[in-house]
Structure formats: structure tokens, C-alpha cells
Image (cartoon, rainbow, N blue to C red; front, side, top):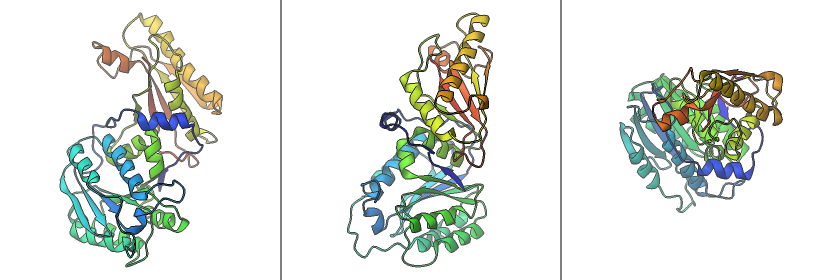
Length: 351
């Protein structure tokens, strides 16, 4: 399965920066799915405090769902929100609209009586397979949000197998609130049914890290795409790494550190200035990113750099905003089996 977990801890300042950054949909033009469903665990165990995060699990789930919803591009696919334990339709299958889905998430309480509310996860998957999934347009994504606890009804793994048989174009993706080995094992088993397609991520990483939520949304919803980190700002006509850009690069370094990944850093500029000046500036920007990553433990000999000057604009150079977006460094890294992260590219923007 594909996982989005951070190899090393990042600073509290990075967590605060990422959680507080302005949300925007991921850059995506071609949808990967025709339909999707958020399937939310609404059982008693989700109303309990997470053993490691000291917070109500469903409250954490809603925070993660808000972050995901903020990043989903509106590309014409249909979507819905459903719960199990108990089975409930929160938002019926319809053309995806961000505001409608947020109201749906907000309508769900994260406090109610826990006693006697068991977790029939397998029964919930089976119910919605029969009532919805078997008839959805494919490809279909089901985003299962759960702590993995299951103490009643049919086996969730068998229910997921049956869902795939009923709709071969369906893929389960996991947002885990698990705080027990058994719960995580249940979620891992479901993800293992489609290991090359299913994306598994922990809710706390969705909440705390822009790179993770952007990666998850891109992998689930976009046919092809990359993480675009638009919150990073740099000084005009400069390659200096600011505190804000350092926060993003720290996170990338944490993902890549100790891996066998090779990294390609490409520098770019806007159209202001001479061709010769911009070529040198683009090379300096690429080298600046390389030096920073190398200083964070990424082997310098695994990082290649190139400068393209102003020759590869991706935005309109006739506007201030377009020029700002063209002042960037693009980072590509090849994925190896020991890199627990699924994105090959990130953009670092230069002001």
C-alpha cells in the first residue's frame, strides 16, 4: 500500500506553520476518479480520546476531513459522505461541491454516549457496497476514516473483498485514527487488497503537514499531478532561503533523509531582467535549495541542479502574480521502496 508518514519529527514551528497555512485546492486538471465516497466510522470507539494524541478521535477526524476537503479540486466528479455504526447518508451522491461537503462534515457530532455502541465495520462496508458502491461510475475512490476497531459483524477484510468483486473499479483509501496495533492491522489489511493503488495516511499527519494532505489528495483525485507549495515566499531577485521556505524544505528533508532517492532541483525565474541575469539567478536558486537540503542530511551527490532562466514559464508573465509564481524552484525526487512518501515533485516558489 502507499503510505504518507514522516520519517523524522519536524519542529513545532513547522507544525504550526503547516496547520495555519492558507488552504487551496491542489493543482490538478485531469480527474483520476469519476465518483468517490467518504465512509466515516461513527462508532463508540471514535468518540473516545486517542491514546497518543489526547483528543477525541472523531474531532481529529473532522479536522483531517476539513484539510482534505479544502484541497480537493472541483473537477466534475460525483461524491458523497456516509457513516457506519450507524449507517447514515450525510451527503447524497452528487457533483462535488466543497461548501456542501464541509457542511456535511460539520453536521456530525463528535460527542455522544459511548456505551453499547459497537463497531460493525464489515457490516458497514457491506451495507454501502450493496446500497451505493456497486452502482457507482468508475473509477471510484472510497476514503475510509476509522480507528480500525471492529468487534461485531462480518470481517472487514472479507467485506472489502466483496466490495471489489461488486465494483472492480473501486479502491479503498485509508485515513487512520488507529491507536492500537489491532486497529491499524485491520486498516492495513484492507489497504493490502490493492497495494499499488490504495493510499494510507494517518490523520495526525494530514492535520499537521501540508505536504501530506496535498500528496494524499493528489494521489486519490488526480490522474497526474504534483505537490505545489504556494505558501513559500522569497525576496525579490534573491535565492535566499527564508524561514518560511526553510519550514517546507525541513519537511522534505525529513521525508528524504536516509533514503536512496535521487533529487533533481530545477531553478526558474520570471521575465524581468536580462536573459543572462535570469539564467544565473535560476542556477543560484537551484544551488541554494541543494545546499539547504544537503545541510539537513541529504547527500549532496544525490542532488542534481539545473537552471532554466525565464525559458519555462508556467504562469502569465504579464501580471505581478504570474511573475511571482514563475520565480520558483521545482524539486523532483525518484521514489524508492524505503521512501515512505509518494510524490516525485514539489514546487518551491521564489518571490
